[in-house]
Image (cartoon, rainbow, N blue to C red; front, side, top):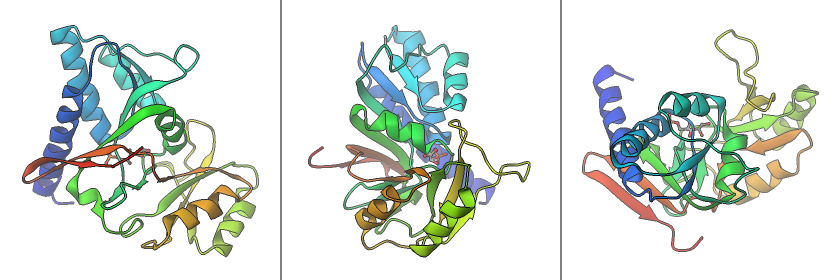
Length: 237
Ligand code: A5P
């Protein structure tokens, strides 16, 4: 992406993140997402904690987010202390405009992100408008987290359902390993007519731990773009 476009995208992500931080109320237990947009949210949240004395605690969705939160003095908590989260704020790789269905996991944190978001009363997604699509899978693949044992056999099963899987590699060219110790197969389904059917297939493949189709989980999207931050709302949760 050219530098000026990157700067613009970052401005839109930041605007959405700041709008989300303004929604946070005293006493909330928050799910803290992973990725560059979530990182802007953590900065804005820490500013409110420092300047206004805002009292919250957060459950991070990755080691990376936990480390950033500690650096910013954001209080952290765990599921052993809070079984239910008031609000999760997280980014997304794609947002389907009509349904608010999401693809997540290009940052590799999809398993913990799904555990946290589905344990939350509400999920607010923060994104820039380049993430908006009319059909999920139009721009990005679906990350599928698999157990490393026998991943080749799981890949074969995914191939049979038309997933076009490819093993994600880290910077060192070795297989990327998630916080849960698993591998990720990025599955290029293309634009999906029926993402619920795809999710159903993925849910029933042995070796698949979780997938990046987040369907019916997001309550609202704060979408940064040239005209400011737009709110897309789901009618019911
Ligand atoms: C992390 O695993 C992902 O689900 C992220 O939420 C997603 O990749 C969005 O990332 P950015 O905010 O960096 O675009």
